[in-house]
Amino acid sequence: MAPDPADPAAILARIKERAKAAADFPLAEFAKLIDHDTKTVGGWISASALDVPPLVDALEAVLKLHRPVDDGAGAQCKGCATHVTFTRWPCATYRAITRELTGKEAGDGE
Ligand SMILES: [Zn+2]
Image (tube, rainbow, N blue to C red; front, side, top):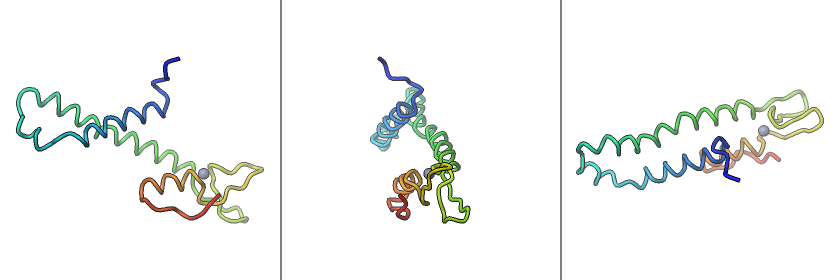
């Protein structure tokens, strides 16, 4: 079965692949080669930059769901807690995002 191209993991994998290719591209060498073909190459490089806004939107959507609330029993995650569970803030999702963005752990939730 072929992977679903609309699967978020597949989308992120393609974005990571483009970002790595753009990061590895020798821009100094590219500057020496500006000619009629650069429009195509420039488009390829900028494709990676165009990936940034939807990634930020996706993270903002997740962070909007995973936020602290306190109904009197201590801070818990609005997105993770259910009517029968208590997920101490910061939750694992928030901590994972924070760790990847900052390189630091955000608290010691469960
Ligand atoms: Zn959460």
